[in-house]
Image (tube, rainbow, N blue to C red; front, side, top):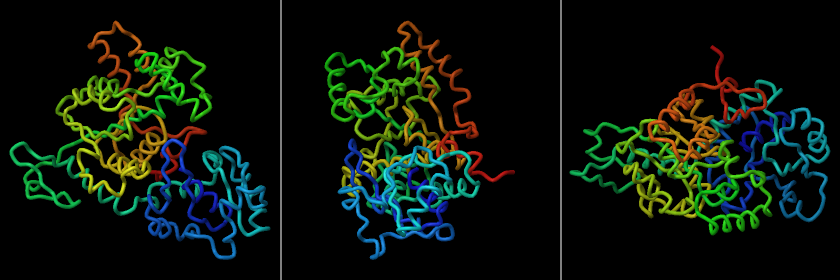
Length: 401
């Protein structure tokens, strides 16, 4: 999303864009660069008629480094760009710096461009970057294609599927009908669990461990800490646990014949947390179960590349559902809307209240879930003022009929 905004700002300023530097997230600790994740030549080529893009700074500006800006206040550093700044803000505050110095370095640059009151050509350019220019590097796409193929054509009990390359093609595929599958984005890592400040039933030991983690990462300051667990759940602020996402899917009619692909990083609580979900959906797969360690060697330990593979598989699934709102959820919802693909959006406040009710029967739970998700199963939603164009890609990214 930041990359799309960077292209838009470069267009507003009629400036050349240097391929953005990606900050290392303190939680994920992944130093992968733009070129490690995205096909940079494709990116530059698709946008060549819109803006000029260079991979590196020209020699005349080689002094403009992160180290240079870290040691003192520099006139070419823009560090106070407001959140959701207008196009005029950039013209009034950044353009003069560019004209005087020939270069401007904007950092931080997260959520620094408005979603409203921008020319339609800038909005369309954001869409073009998001859905056409940004594609993953070839080895991510190849592994993603292999995983999708193995989900579509799983081995039968009588005839195991054997592959010796990433294509996944065998003679068996000719006779076998492709199967449908659901991607479940399970954002239930320690980071999410701690930041939510919710109680996940692990007792005092778990509460203490998550509180210590909050203190270490965010200095103990998270917005949700001011609310009780009951308040957080009734407001839909708690991420769904593996057990809860399993109950949601079961209530919506998915059963033990459903093929699931679990898109996740490290699930908080490990296999013990996932076992209930696996019991409900024994045909559940993941990167680890579908691909050998040799096939995963290029993405091992790299959170951004692991997420890229999950994103790619998520874009090729029949149905996508996320256990909690967040960047991955928002990006996939917007992208799948653009491609007219089905996405289930959990009704978090409703589910929070249902899970708080310890006396509810299965029939009552199922009826409430079905009724509460009638309008949350892929229906087109038009973007409202101030909403993100990356989550709500209609109507800005669509042609007017």
